[in-house]
Length: 252
Ligand code: NDP
Ligand code: 8X3
Image (cartoon, rainbow, N blue to C red; front, side):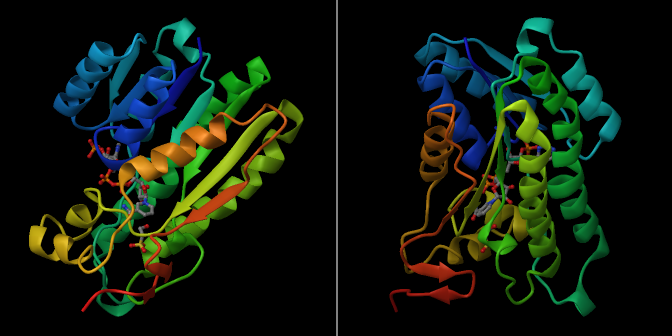
């Protein structure tokens, strides 16, 4: 049976993607920092689909914890077919001169270093099997910069660069690498960006129809379900009302 490992599966894209892969018969490894959410998702998946679930609770910023937790999983779970590097966040929105350095470090440690720790651990398992698919969740913020997006954009530009570089490194091993670059999607993303300010978070999605987590889950599964000789290198997807990070058509 195929196995999908999805980081950041307690919410948003990661949760929807775990459900989508389970729906299609994948055993899933779900990770995140909130054990209660992982337990809930495990119960939901087991109740609804005939697949197995492994939950791993760790912080991707913690190098030792991330590598140890992953290496400690039972041998049979290491035949990971699809790795979805999704765990990530934006923290704050401000000019460089006003930026909060703690927020910067959180974004760099999560979106960039966390993704590297996970990939460094899991990709050798795929190489051993001569097959696998790495799906990195980037962003349109990794394609264009926007006002006050500076460090978040930089981490997502890095995800874009790493995805291209990984595709070269994985080439001799038959491992596919896909980057998905979404625009605005209504998840917990803005609540996290605005440090829990629900009104500010809600305002990001006012006046147009944003993407939802299922849209990204559909794309991730579509990419993974192409024939083995086909790899979607990258997919940039926005709401119809958004052309680029700073270009919108909103209702008044
Ligand atoms: P959510 O906030 O809904 O989900 C983020 C997930 O990442 C959660 O499961 C969270 O789990 C996990 N996560 C965050 N920090 C850590 C950490 N240090 N260690 C482990 N897990 C962590 O947001 P989205 O679903 O929207 O975001 C998913 C990805 O998509 C991110 O990489 C984001 O940058 C990207 N993205 C989002 C867009 C949007 O508009 N929503 C658009 C483009 C890209 P927990 O808190 O339990 O640890
Ligand atoms: C999230 C999308 O445009 O808010 O990556 O940066 S955006």
